Structure formats: C-alpha cells, structure tokens
Amino acid sequence: GDSVTQMEGPVTLSEEAFLTINCTYTATGYPSLFWYVQYPGEGLQLLLKATKADDKGSNKGFEATYRKETTSFHLEKGSVQVSDSAVYFCALSANQAGTALIFGKGTTLSVSS
Amino acid sequence: GAGVSQSPRYKVTKRGQDVALRCDPISGHVSLYWYRQALGQGPEFLTYFNYEAQQDKSGLPNDRFSAERPEGSISTLTIQRTEQRDSAMYRCASSPIPPEQFFGPGTRLTVL
Image 1 (cartoon, chains in turn red, blue):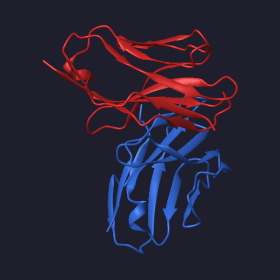
Image 2 (tube, chains in turn purple, orange):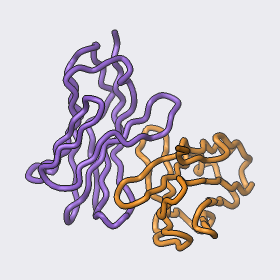
Image 3 (tube, each protein chain N blue to C red):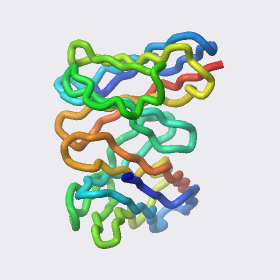
C-alpha cells in the first residue's frame, strides 16, 4: 500500500544553519504531497504542498520539490530560527479526490541559539 | 475565521467506559476526517465523511469505534467499552476541496 518514510530525528541545529528533512514515498498513481508542522502545544498546521511532479511548495522560508523520478519531497530551509523548533510530518494524499492523508512518523527539529 | 475545534481537549476515563469526542469543522467544509495518533507516530486515518455520508470507515480498528455526522457539520467519534490501548491523540480535520485538510487541536484520550 501507499506509504511515507521520513528521516528519523531528532534533528538538532544551531540558529541560521541549513535544514534538510528527507521524505520519500510509495504510491500508485499521482499523489499530492504535503508537509505539516506541529509546534509545541499546538495542532497540526499545513506548511506547504505540491500537487504534481516538479511543483515546488514554499512557505515561511521552507521549500520542497515534488520529485517523481526519485519519489521524494524533501523539506529544506536555508537558515533556521529557534522558532522553527517543532515536529514536521510529511504526508501524501493518494489522489486528488479527497481521500485520507497518509503520514510519515514525524521528525523533531530542535534549533538552539 | 474560526478553525476546526475539538472537545474535550483532554479526556481521562476508566477502562470499560464509553467516550464521545466531538469535532466542529470549519463552516462550509464538505469533508471531515478522523485520525488517531500514537505517541511518536504520525496520524493514522480512521474514517471520513462528505456532508453527512460516511464515505470510508476502513480505518476504524474494531466495532467499538463508530462515528457520525448527522447534519453534515459537527461530528462525534464514539468509543465504547474503552481499553488502555485506545489511549492516543484523536485528531479531526476538515476540507473545503480536496486534497487540503485543516486540523483541529486534537483530543488527548487517556484510558486508565
């Protein structure tokens, strides 16, 4: 079945460091891909999305490119801040007709000043 | 505008009791989803509705779990005869158009 695999955390970085969180997926057809973020004590928030191959999603300085050839959707940010400390979830929707999201296990990011 | 709300935010119950978890979606959102999230894991799908119709309940773990959305707005997830293994975060999401989903804050259920 469809699945999402994320790099295991925790990821610990200093402020202004470059961030990459790897995400690969297995799916039949052409899924939509998402990154959700969970800040401490809060619910899941949509960070960015991409609905077709080669699309780049971006928000708050984060970017991810939908790579069909490598079945990947890696999350990147050029310069992290302490406020980026959170748990990041990669997810896919198997098609665009409103089926459930399939999530990875989440990657905890901790940024220190 | 108001986001997805869930109540209660925390629920502690004794094994064998029934619990009802409520989700109030964003106004006008057609689709509503329930997920369960164990500690250190990503959310896992339980069931979803379009309007009042339950479209998919394949993720409900057993027949102690049920959900309804009678008027196509508020939804209730009910767990009968709770067991300790039911302890988890229960998350609700609503969607105006696929595939984007907006999540509520979750209900943390603890079964003693």
